[in-house]
Image (cartoon, rainbow, N blue to C red; front, side, top):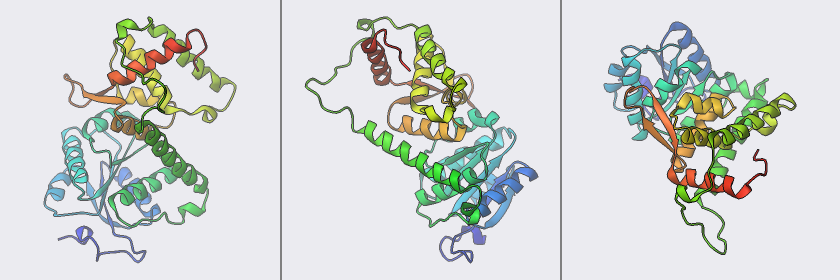
Length: 306
């Protein structure tokens, strides 16, 4: 059995266990190696994507797997991701999937486990943080190496705050609305005031215009931007793939995917497989979320919704 897969005893001088890298090219392998080592881990083995599934199936357990993809590898990639998703869900090991923005849809269609960390077009700090987050979630000791002391230190701090913000926001959402004198009852859409897709698009455009005058980071609110985008799509009877939702969020794709999977986990969004394309997933509002948004627009009336 490979030393990589021996859980506790096989550790680096740092005290951290090694990580298996699976990559789609030599260049991807080099990037993954830098990301793993920046996280304070060492590389236990490096495998080409084609053929990696057979290697993983022969192993009883693992500590962590980093999958680096810079091209669409078709069926071998899909099969590997589906297997890794199942293994991570069962707690066999932690996993990070790093890829380019062009691969968001086929990756999202196969990665169904929320515990897998995505990194899309990530910088050094985001990549280092991803493995640390994944390993910590899996219960493996982790630390960020000296990368935290260089120019990426501020970005690492921001990433930590970002994860905390998502967690606290969704924790509040999960508790439900603050009790009032009369709880809101679901209202059939037919009983709500008419809401056009153009009205919602106008709000989206107004939000985007702020970036002409101020830094976009001042107004980052990916959850609200995704809600608005999915609402206008619902009204227009359009289906929205994962990649489009990430673009609508107006934040880096890695951040958008993190918000998206948590919104799904909280029952605000639904992931629905494309019946005509097994490598694409659509995102929709749940009926309760749609109802809440329509009531919100009805309540604010002519007041500008930004």
